[in-house]
Image 1 (cartoon, rainbow, N blue to C red):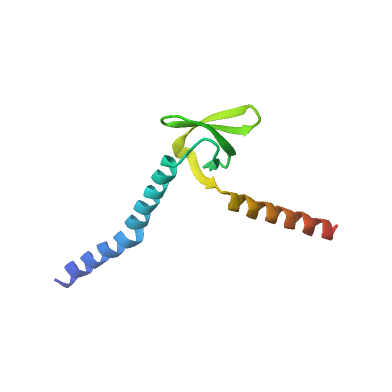
Image 2: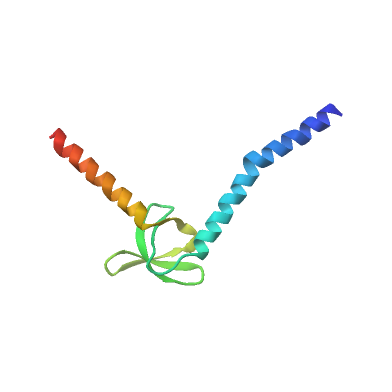
Length: 104
């Protein structure tokens, strides 16, 4: 009887540690994919940054340079970059350059 309770407790703990967080991540990814629109700045799973030029059924056209577009799967979008994210990255880059100039 005691081992049965222990097994049930172990399964419950595994559910809350492993399965539930994974389900939450899947829901967040699905919401991210549904919210994609032209003009958004995104980063793909492979680290490619670009602006969405066009959204189709299962793919997006990602502009990575002027007049250079890549056709990628919607599921490849790892992150949507907001204006706040860009500002933070710009500040960090400026700080890094200033530190490099001071070292030289």
